[in-house]
Length: 443
Image (cartoon, rainbow, N blue to C red; front, side, top):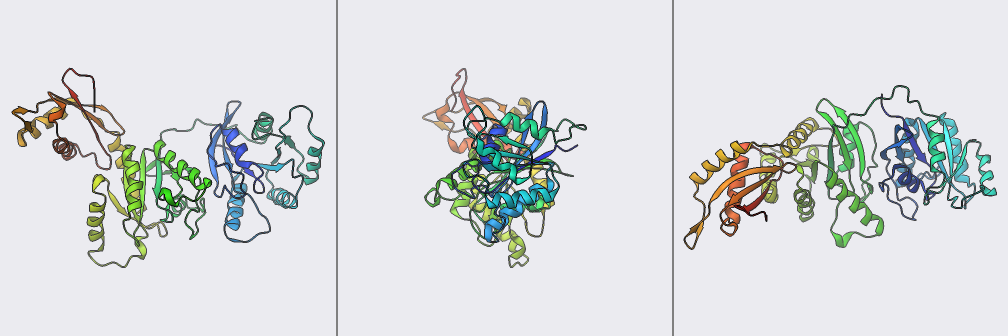
């Protein structure tokens, strides 16, 4: 049975994300004293008294404004309410009951969902302040004073929420999922891809760079396996990152790469390769992640018989530093070749976790050194005694040699290429460590 869903809603800047972070014990939602920071729905597992449920943070609701992103944010919050088993409405003690709070309370009562009212910024301990009782006028009934900053009252809030949830058919969650980070420059279609995969408008999509701010995890189950897709904020050059919120967004994106196993690097087919694409891909490469290059918006490219081959060759040259990464041409808008994308993600993840027996590696090494003799310097020739794999994700190999200085970069690259030629390792970087025989140091 799926986990129960609890949505946190309220008007902008009442502390929803602060409470979300406090309840989950993680700094997943960006917190800034600016209305409208959270735009998309953010999901995270939450546990209380031995029960798990899915907690959803939403953007602030402006009930009577139909303008641009605010309308998108209200729609996202409405989707969260519709799918929730219980709703936590957050209000602010110091502001009192506002007309927006009254409108939101009416919307929640019309939804028919059980609602718990959390009055935030009750930071002092002891008897509840008298202003708290003004919130009974909203007609919701159950009121919990909380402090998102200090954590006061969050236990009572969770107790009240659990009273509305059904855990009678609770089953252990399958943790064997492939974490996939969707990364790229702003406005290349990352959120559109995740929405297409989910079959719903989970992420806000707008023709405005920087619409996505949080790195948002979403579980996906299909015939290709079990995945967790993370939609990330677009990564721009440092000089173009304008404010604190965007800096936090970039940090969330980089953190999403670090906790992923596969990175889908999205390229805009209408613009082609840019310098920033190489920087985004370079970060995934440095982190040792399995990578897939997804060329999006392929449906709107003028094509002939040779267009795909031409672009594939050009991208292979542009991404020469990660020539191992397969290239998939997709359309997030139409769903074109998404099945191929899933197959490729699954395949490169398996390659990233490959372990090769030492015996097979040394048979390959013997053939490679017989084919191309190791280099020498001043009469001293490099000797490779043996090679072994020390770890996976990424596959990491240790070569034992007589002198590290003789193992030139070009010959290391040759050995790496021989490993790929023999064992595949498509879609994953590999690492090569060098040790002198009997020496514990590496480089």
